[in-house]
Image 1 (tube, rainbow, N blue to C red):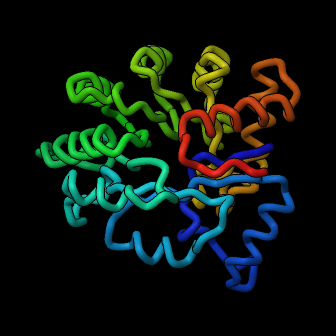
Image 2: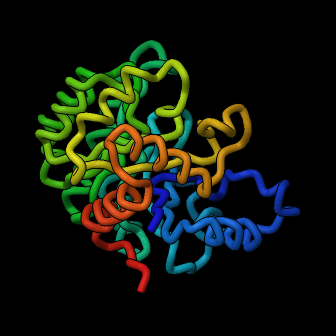
Length: 261
């Protein structure tokens, strides 16, 4: 069973499918992808995303505001908790810190991160955390705000083994995307070799970061198979075994997601 633990289905290119979202889903399912988590990045487009994706049992949702969305409406704890009451919402996020694309006073980013952590604690649903060039502050806020009480995943992980170990100590999972297949990602592959198997997830982050052999093209959830193959090779496992392990991890973490019968 393959699960794409992080994708943005409302942003995937439907050109190859003649603009048909159902055709995309059909092709994805035919490729053996049995569940997807469609991740929200701002509240302005949340309802549109929810409407597009519909009520498919093999798709779960998150709700949150991405740290790179500087000009978006700031969510409140109560608003996030209220939205998360939807049974299809299985996580809060994606949230976190990104100092790569943002400059100047970033207190707004840190405050937003804390709001998401508090909301996750209140509603009892895990966090999806994005971090880039903000290792120390990300871990510091996670510790200070009590993110371990909610748990969650460090998505599209590209940081150091030390940061992975710090997140693991807080009870978080580590998710690897197509970046792990890139030629210059050997240090990241070393991290993937060391993460405990019961804390490992795989994702596409579609439509971004397509894995080899599709690098440079638009990404799709079905390409998570390439991530599974590479991680399986790193861990000395058959791809099917790695897929089952990561699927089991997904449904353990996102306990509100509906398992395939």
